[in-house]
Length: 75
Image (tube, rainbow, N blue to C red):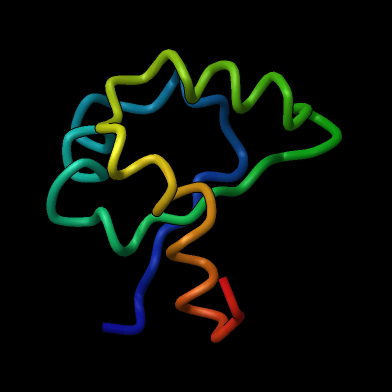
């Protein structure tokens, strides 16, 4: 229950299909946005992420909601 995956360090266009599939299903509450700034700018990362086949209801979880819950922040 305390293990998460962050997506920093690589561009979403290189995510393996298995990661995308599990991010949409079993891991939808365990995946966190992460950039590799300054190597990959947030704008580029988000543009590449937009091109992925991530379900619309899962996108906000990855980009914000999962981190808010994990860190105990107010959404």
